[in-house]
Amino acid sequence: MTRVAIGIDLGGTDIKAGLVDENGTLIERFKKSTEGHLGGRKVVDRIGDLIEEILKSDAMKGRENDLQGVGMGSPGLIDHAKGAITRPVNIPDWDYWISVHDIFKERFGLTTWVDNDANVGALGEALYGKGKGKKVVLVLTLGTGVGGGVVADGEVFNGARGFAGELGHIMVNPSGYPCGCGNEGCLETYASATAIARYATDRVRVEHEPTLLREMAKQNGGVITSKMVHEAAVKGDGVALRVVERAGRGLGIGISSLIVSFNPEIICVGGGASNMGDMLFDFAREEMARRVFFHSHFQTPLVQAQLGEEAGTVGAAGMALQKSLAKAAG
Ligand SMILES: [Zn+2]
Image (cartoon, rainbow, N blue to C red; front, side, top):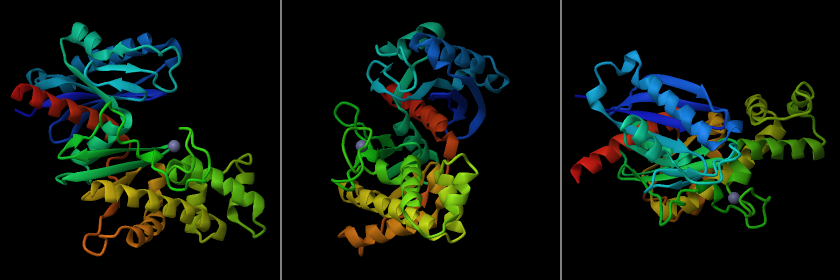
């Protein structure tokens, strides 16, 4: 028998889901719009409807007895013990705890495990992506913000109250740009797609040298995106390259602190901005080599994550498969 679980990735726009087996294979994917404006309780009902759809799907046929439960990644605050969620960003009217564990237990008789979406994505990459088989895996996702997670021996490190792994808020520069978290100069203010776009916008305003970014912005209503920075840098644009350098060095400085804290076996970087690849990573690697005292004895590989968009769904299911085993063992 091959054990399977349902993975749910709750986002602001869509609820993504999938039936996943213990090898990390996404057997079939499912999707529904979140409709966050309806409020928390209605969103949870929509997640329930999606689970029902999966249970009745052809993909599920013959696998009913192998189903171990539901894993879910969600933004907001998580009560791991109760399988409850509150205050997910982008969903107003959800400022109270809802136990999805209790609701889905009653509706389907299935056990649901919940964790923070960034942690669940990190677990997916660690179990089934580039981190597979590695002892300690750090995952960073460079998106609108910088998400992350620490996975040790195949399990997410959650800390005392579940707030560990907020790797985007490692400090890179104590007098840097303000961060959404209230601190200043966090990794997120350097390496997120938002930070890259904002810094590029600033540079284009003050630099006098010609830059492709100025032309690209003109054709896009004055807005510069991190993808444009990537495109311009590939063409050798000086201003764009300096923007990439700032992001890469910031990333490397942040990672250096993480390396001396966790001694990871590998660091996987995903999210849109990670598509810059070595152009971005080589600056980070330079900072790591310069700052980590044991680098000459042990070099931590920095690689682009493998799972992409699916990391959340696959990781959520992976969490359920793992927790159900632990439960069965006693
Ligand atoms: Zn921060």
